[in-house]
Amino acid sequence: MAADGRDGKKIDVDPKLLELLACPLTKGPLAWDPERGELVSRVAKLAYPVRDGIPIMLPSEARAISPEDVLPPPPPRLGGPG
Image (cartoon, rainbow, N blue to C red; front, top):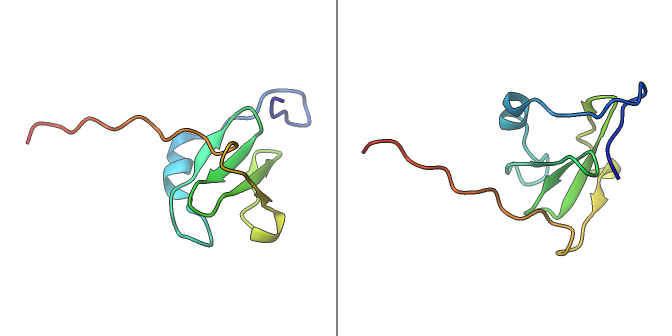
């Protein structure tokens, strides 16, 4: 299921915005799930919806996710010269 806006276009989240957002419960990072149009907190096991391009960061609006639904961890970032 792809996330679509009202105009039928696929919704995407700005990577810079994603770096700024945090789970309101754990204060941990969120991962973007483009298939479901949700921001996923792996630690809290919650998926926050994005409606009309606006993240709904309310725990009462979040969907509980099972371990199978949790996205795989992002690839490790390569460190610069040390």
